[in-house]
Length: 109
Image (cartoon, rainbow, N blue to C red; front, side, top):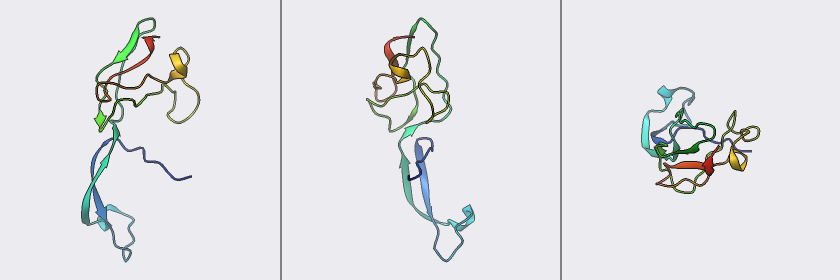
């Protein structure tokens, strides 16, 4: 199937390359053709939950986050099953607070 972007959410420049160039390095892409908005989370965030206590955090960061989006606790993103011990097979409740607040099940692990 088609490849999916795994870029961090943010604002990027769209730089164009003419077909008469190899378009293989950054130096070939010299025409600024606009802005690309990638909606999604910032990469490599750290959040903390302790077993037996409510698991919720309110400071998830990203660009264009929305309520209803979800996280899944996995050993490796895009592969395998949800982590043992998390409610709902590791899938969080839908985000709230403009996509910044996440929790699992009733909130306890």
